[in-house]
Length: 196
Image (cartoon, rainbow, N blue to C red; front, side, top):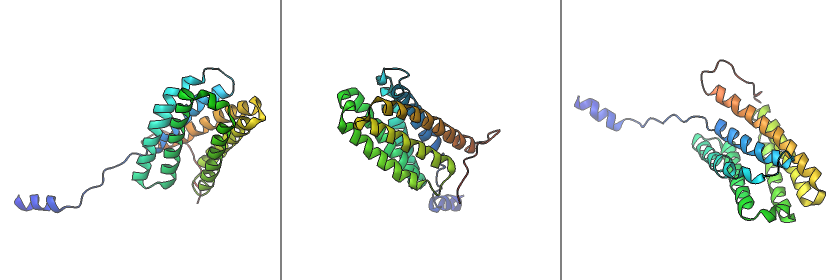
């Protein structure tokens, strides 16, 4: 018995199993994007409704998913979820405390920076899977339309960005569901078309 206790003391630590944080990050991104995009598309006017989601679901939950991706060794997922979580926290602060900035050229440059970052992330998907490639391509087009609108092209581009954002959210929900189904014993699965 004493020998067993000594062996347990010197045994290698067992790594704790970590659940896949990607479905959480993708669904948090999708829902928050969907609500704000619906406002941008002109489906309703109260954009402040997104505040709670921007802070907690799109912001904190997605930021946590990013940190868990770091722990899991997924650099792409960690960078994407942490960055877009921070994006949502920043947008929430702007909507709550500086809403007048949303109608300025400065906000257009804010969006331009996110367009460039999303283009970089799109390049990072080229060896991952088709679902992520389509998601980041749609997100890039969303940011591009919103940037053009914010830099002076007008409400038509903002509304286009809203509709593209709704499409982006649907793709993110699909990709999140595919990951959720693959993480458990599901009766069916959804293809993501992995790249080689």
